[in-house]
Amino acid sequence: MTERETLASLRVLVSMARADGVLTAPEERAIEDAIAQANLEGLTLASLFGTDFELDDELAELKTDDAKRATYESVYALAHADDACTLPEEHLLAHIEAKLGFSPENRSVLKRLLEEAEDTVLPAHIAEIVDPERRAAEIREDTLKYSILSAALGAFPIPGIAIATDLAVTAIQTKLVRDIAQYFGRKLDQKGAAELLAGAGVGMGLRIALNNLAKFVPGWGSAVGAASSFVSTFALGTVATRYFESGATDVSVLRDEMTRAKKEAQAAYSEQKGAVTEKQAATKERLEALGRDLADGKITKAEYEKQVEELA
Image (cartoon, rainbow, N blue to C red; front, side, top):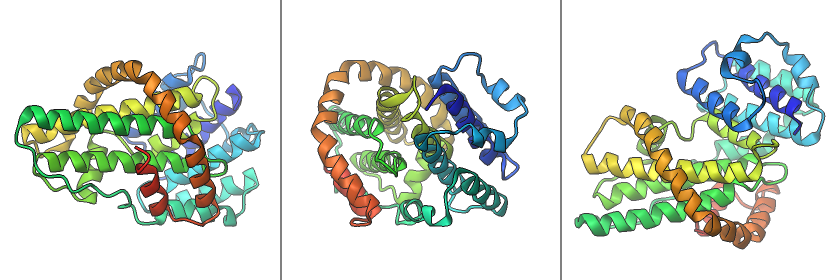
């Protein structure tokens, strides 16, 4: 996408984020992160939200098919992020569909991806490890393994349903925290894992929507998509380990921990760039085939995510 299309896409997302009348602090932080990554000259959170714009004018700026589809996928994901599309969000989504030339039938694949069972990549059966050093080594190995796979996914848009890879990253991150819990002798169900991810600011609908746009934006692109997916997964593994190690029960403390852990994760990514490149090359053909099968309805989202997880 061009810089003008990027700005238009962000403004369309802002319109959807505002549709329910509430723009939460996590939503603001996610958009602020996206602006920083996009590196658009003169664009700040204040200018994005403080500038008046007409939605239809911004939609008209989306000229290319990639820009239209990426924006539509992201807006749809944001509208359904909390498993309930409100009436104002539904009306706005229908308006955006009409303006971008999509029909309600275009929702079918996206609807299937977002509504199929979320508990798809299941935790392994891991026995508790009492020895702290051995437990730390096992968790570190798992965290690195899934961070590298997340990086490969973060750089890889599936034609027509690019958002599927972002959903797969969230599924992998869910598996990671559930596996880490087992190393500490704790059982974490899907709801508990989702609460932990939300507490850390990972996996929220707006962040998924923004990550989807990133794959099509100059200055973001595959390199930034890979880096951000690696960093968020690695940092999540770090804070989840500390969370269970301390016996904490309040996930609200994780957001500040996540901010600190990202610095360590960024250093780890610099060290692992070669491994990420190798994983991208090794999985590209398989991911392309799985993406085609998913888009054609030959496999379900659950089957897609299970086979993706096996690539780790």
